[in-house]
Length: 181
Length: 211
Image (cartoon, rainbow over all chains, first blue to last red; front, side, top):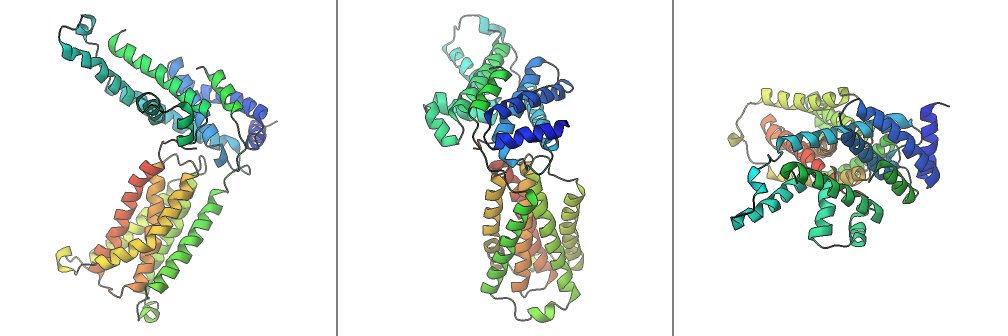
């Protein structure tokens, strides 16, 4: 069976709410996205970031696929743009990467140095995706619960949790990179 | 969270969705609404007295035909850009942009008067804005339901289409045919509107928390 026909069939069932077909579809397209990303970026973390961003986009925008059209051109447009997004984010990250300050290893003799980690955190937060920034802001700074965020944004609770989790992971990597913790 | 976990999580929360109508169908619906709205608005604001005779003048008809072509091309582009994989090549985009620029160039060549020498046309601006407002809102709300991957361009072409049809209506109302008036108070607002559309597109159609 032609791959496009097979994926189109699964996507049609997914649009009707068939979870098993959807899981099958996501497994297959994640392999496609992974091979697309591997050919373009180095590092397994970046590859998985592109794959996961693609899956989130596919999930969020699944209503925009027209069942009368081929699936693969639609999917390739999504994965290509997620790759460009991740690439742009990486470039911005490298441009504003915070150099490791050797004085950070010494105890703070000046109380103003206490502010430095806060500044680093702000800088790192600004490097996350807009979605991650908004959810972490609402969750940790504005004090909203997951259910409230889900209600406000229209995302499901598990999407909110997944996005926040990925944001924390990225924050940890950025802060470790900046301070060598 | 690893990718397998993401897949399981997304599969668990799957709900049925109604697929959006094809881009050309949605574009057609919007165009119909925009044409009906601008026609009604033009009739309400009273067309110029000499409209029938002006419609026989090629110098009046041609620029309006260009505006209508820009409207027809741009609205299709905007709706196609809102669906991944549905966008076409750059030829149509170039045609739309060149159409507008040719109109501006012809106006600029035919009457290079400075803006200070031309009576103000704020009335034209406000009337054009009132003709373009609802179609613009309708276009953005329809485009937000889709998934524009190039939000700036999508917004640009959506507002260029709305401004083009509104200005075409305005040409039927405003009796000032002085090219300088048309250049400063009809043409430049179309460009400003399109540029604003690009920015609005980035804000309203860009990466955001979309249900």
